[in-house]
Image 1 (cartoon, rainbow, N blue to C red):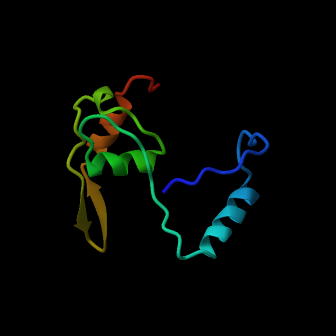
Image 2: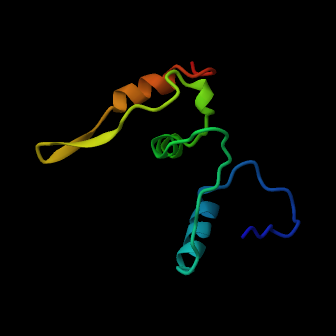
Length: 101
């Protein structure tokens, strides 16, 4: 369910750290709320691509990537820690999208 906010003054260009902290504390006091992510997409969209987009803080159309599908990512144990196998391939793929320096 979408509940729009009441009209009010135009928002500031960027929230301050204090405002963000205040919002997070208010949400923390409401454990009954379920927070989610909504983002429109066209065509196929994999869970791997969703996680890459969330970690990058940006959504890019799958058609902008070559290859179109993200590489297989998996946690690989190494000693007492681990690495994300396929991460370098994902970085290379992301760096080749249009508009990247």
